[in-house]
Image (cartoon, rainbow, N blue to C red; front, top):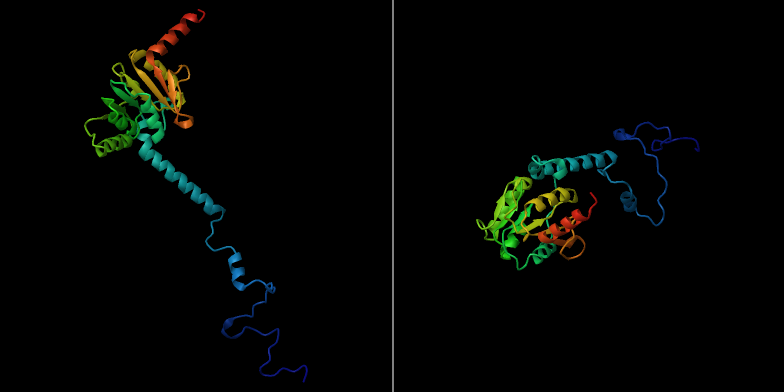
Length: 246
């Protein structure tokens, strides 16, 4: 009979099915050319970082970077005024080669002001520039410098001094290497003019001395270095002072 229901029939208003499940509503039909797996892969994966997840990751990365700075790099700066602090940036092999090219054939005490990991000092000693000395306040970099010298077989032959370069007398230095920030160059220029002998040569990497005319340069771009002979620098400074109106 058309309106009757038998024992095996089910009604739209039927209650919960066996096991407590309710019948799920059927979704829209899949396109004919799409497989069920494609639909699953097209949905966002569980565990994908949301906005808060990205924010937490950024904060964690910042904390890690600060911890590295505070542990490894900051200790050497605590005794130096903020305007004279210089971040550690290792010299590239080409920068080292260009620096030593401008010192080839010279002799006398060679110093690297802010010697970092000691690579320039070690290479200077290899080239015959002796004694070779590095000044580095940061204790971690100071230990790294000594390890580099030991590994190269020069332990006890090169020196790394944990001293403030601003308090060191440079009157016995004839080859001075400077890889420091532009903000440091003006006060350092005054110190070098006051202390270095006329026969000294200063080699600056990355940034030239703004008020000095270089004797020669070598390299290009970030690898360029500038050499200044102190006798010429003093002569230029004296001429400038005499030509200035009183």
